[in-house]
Length: 281
Image (cartoon, rainbow, N blue to C red; front, top):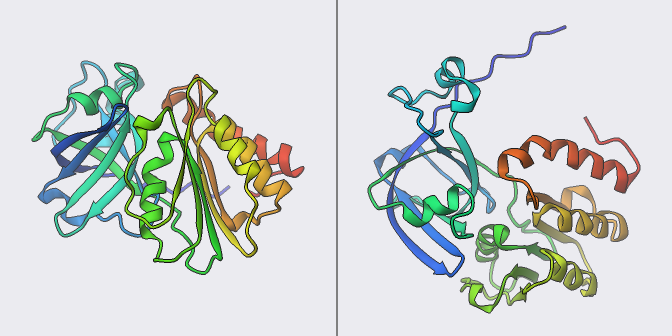
């Protein structure tokens, strides 16, 4: 058996908090910048994401920060905790990266951090990752998501050329959570209220009369409604896999650590259930 190639050392990026802003009652913006971002770029995908590194409680890491050394020398519960966030905007000229955080009071790790962090503080992160940008040769675009997908949807809409055809559905808790998006595409804002997460999105997409032509679709958010929409688009509408970017950003009842640990198995099971065949290797 061939030996697995050694994992390449991963060096995190370092940045400083430039400013913060409360966009809506439940959305906090943090802008990162600094000279250390001179070698960073997030301009090829509209769903670029980074993984913020949060020190485990009480842990003091070696300087300079070395993830491989930490993994080798520290117990697992002292490794940094990662949280994944979409790059809402990247300004290469000013070397500034904008991240938007959904806030649930004191719940979670990254949300409370985003509320209390101050300009000048240093942040470490890995990335960027990303795979989606609106296909320029598609006849129309479908963008669907909850609050967690709003940054990627907004950035995608702003990247569309003038006159592009698109249907965009964004679910938020109420009208106070709507945001201004610099696009001529009219966003359909769905107010969840007391309904389960994703239910308004399911109803809206099911009711949509799909235009003729090739659609390029982006569907992200809570895993359960994403599963239902995947069935609608892949099985009922028979959209080809290559024209669909669809994945659960999060799952009710799980923090990111728990969800990421089970996400691959969840996705493989869904693929088998919905398409009746084992997923490709």
